[in-house]
Length: 464
Image 1 (cartoon, one colour):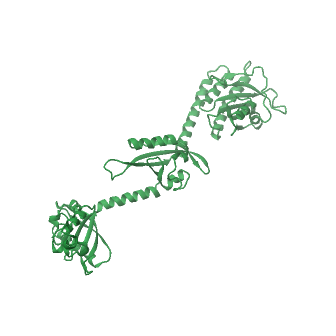
Image 2: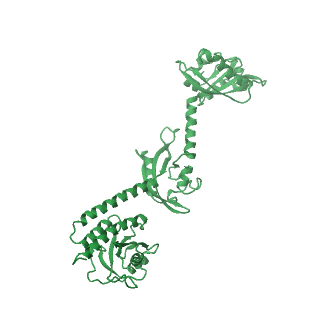
Image 3: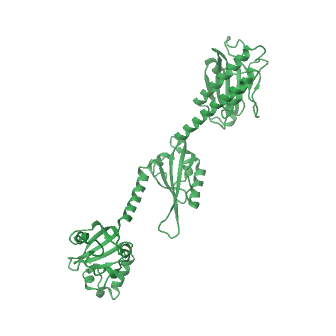
């Protein structure tokens, strides 16, 4: 018998120790089978401190079999050090006189002499007369309990205090658990995002994210974090964000074969860092373009052609079209400014900017045209088609004498030696974003180079 011994000591446990007469000939065997089938280590002592029960889990932890343990008086001399025996026995048997369960931690000895720190839960066993008849004790290795507590504490810390988003995504790719950081990043409450498709939370980038989650479910975590640009739907509108993502596949530890429970998705918002890096890279590129343009323009014999060289270098990564308008002779002495087109990029086909306007005919700009405003104010003017539909945007561009696919414009004044020479206009199609303040600063740098070239061309006989 592996869990208990057939003796009078066992009968003294009363209801907690089944009597053969009450439960039939197999009562003790049934109790032994029940105790052996439990995951917890269990042992019992009678009122004199003699071991009466010892199950298989207790044998696994300490190495002592039931035959070796049952019948011994306490743990002294075999399961605890002699110096600790009195204290351990007193703490265990104190449960007989205390209500409820008593929790203790102390070191036991394994059969091979190792010390194992265990946590015990002890409770008194009452006899038929209601008096204490012994003690039942369940124990487990403390390090296993500590590991469990650490896992729970880690889970709670990740879900409550972590400085990055934590989302547990189920096998259907829907959020099952969301921490506070992730809820803020997704622009919703922690409970409102649960069970919703990711496509309802993100308007862009959802395909890449779902593809990554599907890959993790099938193949496991990728070797390195992945950065994704997404557009988040929020009550305040859509927000473009860059997230650095890590993924782990979750499988049930209770199944013999790995059963996927979902994916642990951890992410951190790195938008500001990435935007800063992009802006720095853009500034370096534009500075390099200005330097290259200056070197190329220096080799031009015709200063007017040098102006078009500056225009071509400026277009790279900046705009789709560009044109230069110069103030007509006497244009600033009349009530209305007149501009003459002198250079432009070819519309509809790639190629370098070409010189125009040798006839000196003014461009038919309507009153309030951005280029006219630019010259009159001696500053920079931005314009755009806004939210107009395609047909209306086309009419908007044509009315301003621009290519029909234009939706964004930036006009910058050309000034040299205190005089206004004209304006340079940069145009973008719908494939690009609207011009921003940093774009205006770059356009002003380009305009300064173009204005110097045009002024020099006007000073040279036969040029311009």
